[in-house]
Image 1 (tube, rainbow, N blue to C red):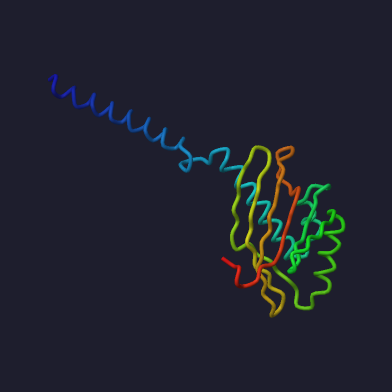
Image 2 (cartoon, rainbow, N blue to C red):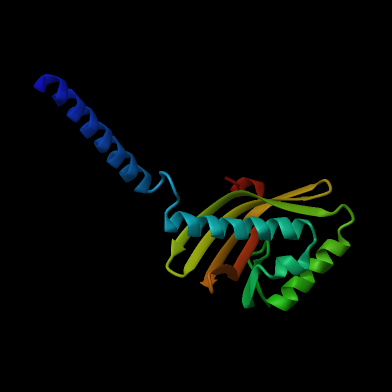
Length: 167
């Protein structure tokens, strides 16, 4: 009779050990629920995707809300010259660019690389711009700041890349 009790104890111990192991696996990064870092990176990625969606939809009001009010935006022209603009002037230039585009313009991220550093996130995006027959690629380098639980763009530097420099 002792033999019939022993297997049932082993079975119960095996079930308990399996439950503990499953709980521990779910707690590991990349398993089960997202870690805090994963959630923060997802929130950053969502903001960047919103940035591209609203720009392409010409929704400059929502696009502008992706930025902190005191954000600095910089553009590197094909000759390597740097132009710096405050947010208001940058948004006005984007509105004018869309207005002047006969064919309309859409810009989509081809890749998004997020790096979290405390309350700051750095994001590198390789993008594709379609404007009628014209196709352009380039990079956006974002610095985002987490403030009151929301990520917003504090700094953006962007430029188009010649075909020879594309990944």
